[in-house]
Length: 183
Length: 110
Image (tube, rainbow over the protein chains, first blue to last red):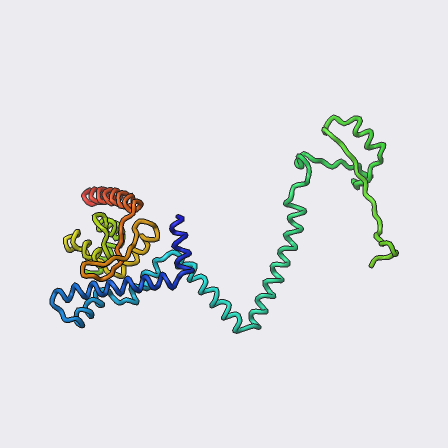
């Protein structure tokens, strides 16, 4: 694994050295093949031609090797990204519309999700939120109403259903700041 | 005819290359010749398949490459099996024998 990562870095960042090594290897292979053919009695130029034919084209072999190297996918991806940016830069109007559409879309989704997350998804910040109950007193006509503190005290005194009870109250006020009035 | 041979070879090329290198380090052309020799002339590996296979195996650490001078004083890139390569050769031989056994049985079944 480590070895593959090392080759990956070598292939990506020391491309020239890797390419030169491949070039040297193929050049030497052509020479070995040429030598072999000359021993069979061919002239040097005929032997070289035969050697290149047997190798099947230096460039073709190189391309096959490149395709087999680690990091080929990354390289292709980088090329695609560069191409995409060039194409976008060529049509700034289109790019602006796309960016704006994406920005508005992502923004709207984020806003909606924030609300849904806070209201529906996130559990209440208590030990056992599924065992939490709200007790309300009802006015005539099934309208929820505020309970008085003595009511609550009675409920708590006679409670045999809940393990704890507590009460809360709400208030409304206006923020004014020191100089009076907002802003 | 030649087409068919490479098709057959595709799955087994790594095994053949590892086998060819099991005796001594060889350069690319010599590996090709050795494969032709050990298959009694049945397989001629194209260099367009051999070199990618060698480079892949080098990246995997199955073979190591080293520049040396060859028989007639030319420098060539020699490939040598590593210990990981030997392990891989054993594994691929075992796998190949299994495939042969299964396929033989399947072909002979009536």
